[in-house]
Image (spheres, each protein chain N blue to C red):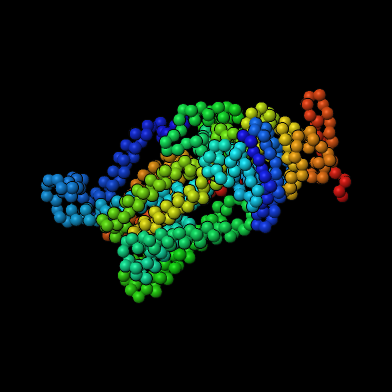
Length: 257
Length: 351
Ligand SMILES: Nc1ncnc2c1ncn2[C@@H]1O[C@H](COP(=O)(O)OP(=O)(O)O)[C@@H](O)[C@H]1O
Ligand SMILES: [Mg+2]
């Protein structure tokens, strides 16, 4: 599915959080949202997910404006994982993943064997099948994150919106998620902190103080000229034979002191 | 993998066991009392009332059983079902394990509403009493929610558990004080039910007409709540996650908090404010059947009914010749349970 973000502006309590942001994700492509803390990545993902109404602008998914779709129809198309979804309930991992089926179930179509298969595959894909009956609250941060991703996998959306999905994960599981993003034939938008991970995406958008300051192919955007002023660092590019993209390393910037 | 079974029992078996427990509790409520009435007498009275031929029954026994004990036990059951389900709903929607209609001030607000109607005199029929209680409960909930929000300020994220509880305490105290004030100021203080009734609950006034109000309301409320079990499950990871899974959260919250307020209000207008049922019963049931609402709701409804039937038996018989307010019994069980849940939930948060 194809996502168009058109001139989105949003203020919360008179404070502008997003300022006239426009971008596009082609069907099946992936978009990395990068930017400093508080630059509006989470807010933009929420707006795309239809969870926040922008003050002006539109989000269009294929031919439908997100604001015009019912929550259920929206959830069948868009899967969203927030940065920090926790619970005090003693819910088992299997039941947590099963929640992903919610938009597909009704009185007339209860949870069936097809749904069960989808849930089991999602758990398998996130390597959490072994935790099925363990309680969510007893898992480590990284395991919880994988449960949430498995939950949206079970939601079988055509667009994934993931807010810092590699948070709390060890490097093995970070790479697993990034590799999963790279392999996806589904449309994905994800907020990332590790700029080197953004190279696997088709497009990168750089946000700073609510504004889109750069948007394009990773090799064009992830360069010193763009990154240094936004993050206040000095970026160095190294090329290695292991990757087909440059490796970025960062040092303290002395420029703006 | 994890199916709809409780301890490996098939649903049909669980339902059968549940009904046996419920019948047992009802039977006990009819048998036990100042004058114990044997089971065969009860059976005969039921047969006579249903219009079947049966042997003579002592008219006093017949009167005690049919006019007092049976409606009282049914009211206890309806009240227990309603309050326990209100607790489940509030806990799931407010993401706070310590929520309960009594603790969050809904019951106190309902008391104030009912007393205001009774004393300002809109006929003081049962329906207007319940209507007043409903408005009171909604006002109290609005006040508590507003207070909790106020304490949160502009910081994003959910209201803290503690802020909500403190707001609940403030709300409950305020509305209890209003109730006491209205009763004290009323010219005809004897006519009004006592302050004790509204604060601790009492089932001694339960009669058949009350049953015709309480039972349908409890049943309708239970059905509405049960139909939302999937939405309540989806709230596990918060309101935003529920919304992202296709739940109309504002709509669901309006309907379900309205239902909880209605259930609480009708029961409070009939029996006074009985505390802790909505807290103790759902937590005990989570231990037994888990957190999924498809099972939790029916289990809580059943256990809530049984809990109040038994609490009322104890209230009637603990001190011979005297009937305690039923809220005394539920609080004796509930307050320690509250402490345990408080400790457990704050540990879960910090770990
Ligand atoms: N509910 C809210 N109330 C007030 N300010 C908010 C709220 N949500 C986000 N913000 C503000 O919006 C800005 C962007 O936040 P966010 O989108 O979470 O940034 P990011 O995900 O890029 O770190 C921050 O300055 C944050 O303080
Ligand atoms: Mg963020």
